[in-house]
Length: 121
Image 1: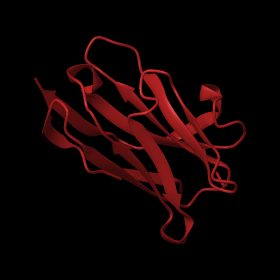
Image 2: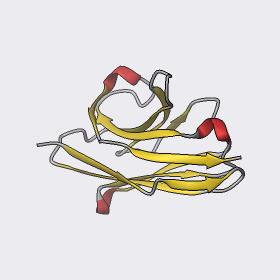
Image 3: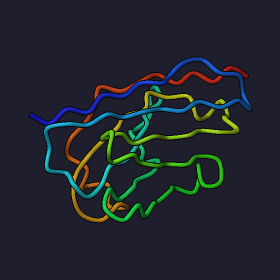
Image 4: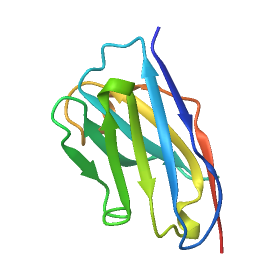
C-alpha cells in the first residue's frame, strides 16, 4: 500500500517562506517524487520533481529560483522549501510518486491528500 503524507502547509505573508514535507512508504517508486499544486478553479499544475536515486531536480519556470526540492532517503522524505512566496503560489500542494523522468508529469501516479498553502498579500 503506497502512502504519501504531506505536512508543513499554513498561512504566510507574501515574501515569506514555508517548508513542505512529504513522507512516503510502501511503494516501489524508487525513482521520482514530485510536488504539484492546485488553486481554486484551476487545473493541477506541476511544481518540481526529484530523483530519489541521483538527486537530480526539475522545476517549472514559475517557481525556479524561489523553490527548492530536496530529499532525505534515510527518512523517506522529500521537502519543498518555498521562499519569496507570492499570492499566486497559494494552493493545495500535493506530493506525488512514480518512476521515470522527473519532468514527465504523467509518470507520477501515487498521490498524497495535499496540504493547504495560503499566502496573504
